[in-house]
Amino acid sequence: MKISVVMAAYNEKETIKKIMESVLSVNNIHELIVVDDGSNDGTTETLERINDPKIIKLFSDKNYGKGHSLRKGFEKVTGDVVIIQDADLEYNPAEYEKLVAPIIDGKADVVFGSRFIGVPHRVLFFWHYIGNRFLTLLSNALTNINLTDMETCYKAFKSSILNEVKFKSQRFGFEPEFTAKMARKGYRIYETSISYSGRDYKEGKKITWKDGIAAIGHILRFNLFDR
Image 1 (spheres, helix red, strand yellow):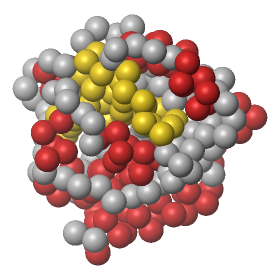
Image 2 (image 1 turned 90 degrees about the vertical axis):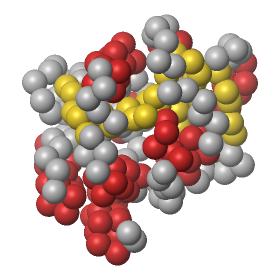
Image 3 (image 1 turned 180 degrees about the vertical axis):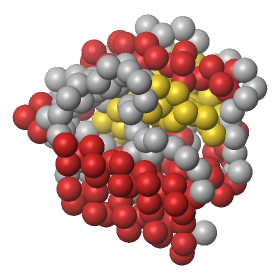
Image 4 (image 1 turned 180 degrees about the horizontal axis):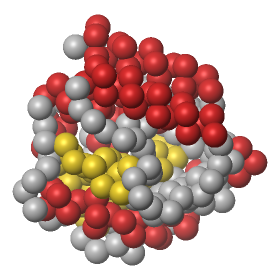
């Protein structure tokens, strides 16, 4: 089974080379599609210097947001399974095997990697944790599924889904939009534990409380109005 990894990157000069090397070291990686979302810190130049036949590099003329970058990357997918990867080092590509196993076994169409079920993780912000749990609870109440981590980056899914579902979100609204649309379509959804090495704002973390407030709107929009 060929794995396509789609990575949105914005101002990740310090980590982009290392995370790409980590992705390409995993077995069965068919392609790594990297979308530079208008970086201005040297990420673009670093990315341009990296050459590998498995890498597809796309560049945006300005910073549009994670959702826009993922949509741009999805258009280039040719593998059997898609994995979404951030360009930092918070998520470990060595765990791809766990993510795709339920799909390979024929049990799942979509797999979420949960940071909150029984694995080591870096201890960071209490209110981020509460915010994540609240957003997952609200999403679950409207989708009628029982995820533990809706906002996780790590999502694996059959690439055929991209022929059936179209996404609209520009920024971090992609997470609740993806979840709402997977649940509404009735895809078989699994969840597996993943490790998580979160970073703080001094280390380059970008999501803020404003994105959390916006996520509430996205959850309501994609579950109740934009159907």
